[in-house]
Image 1 (cartoon, helix red, strand yellow):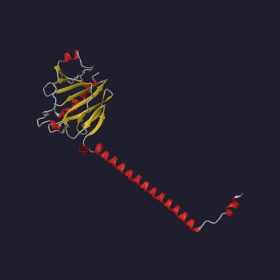
Image 2 (spheres, one colour):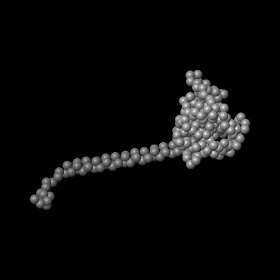
Image 3 (cartoon, helix red, strand yellow):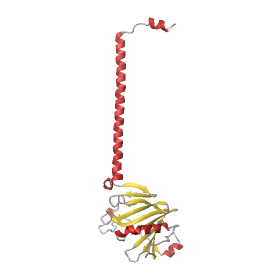
Amino acid sequence: MKDKFMYSCRPQVREAFAEELFTHLRSLEKGETSMTIQKNTFRLKLQYILIALVIAVAMIFGLSPKARALAGTFFQEIAGFAVEEQPENPMAEYIDANGVMDAPNATVYVVPTTTVDDLLSDPPFEFSLPEYLPEGYEIRSDFVGIANSKTWIKIIYQGDSRDKEIGFMAETSTPTLSVGVDAAEEITINGQTAMLVRGNWALDNTWDYENGITLYWTVGETNYRLIIHKIDPDQLDDLLPELIKMAESVH
């Protein structure tokens, strides 16, 4: 049977049915268009929200140290060390006005001391001492601190006066470090990433950016620190290259 015959002989569609079908199809088309507009509007709003969040995060954590301080703790990792940037000393509630720890329920551990010769003859773990010392500094051979856990040791290098000291630490643990906002930065020691921290917590539990400098770096499986606080702030920039030389002489 030919198509021409079928088209010529088909019954006429009722006018009311045709109008009803046309109206139904138009309503479906309008509904789809409305849904498309709603979806596009939602996507546009979502894009604006995401852009606003990105800008806010950039302002808080990149552009304004004061804003970051108000925002609270900021966690990051520098040269493999976990760092918490905080506007106030996290131990503030346990420290009195004189900087003395006041925690009645805390357990106090006495750090054992020994001599450099005894330490080197029976070290708690593998570490090396600096081969380079700034002019006027020498090791205090009679005072070495060793943690009860045997995870760190501390040695003092004494300058030509009692207010000149460089603390040297070697440790197998990697504790989270609490510092002031924007106090830590990445540097390089012997071609490897290291961390420089400027300042220390003051008696009022705020961060004093001129209260010394500390270097953090790693050699093999051992983490090291060089710490200096008792020094004129004007001399810090001059002493920093000397501390880096000390760190680079640890092999």
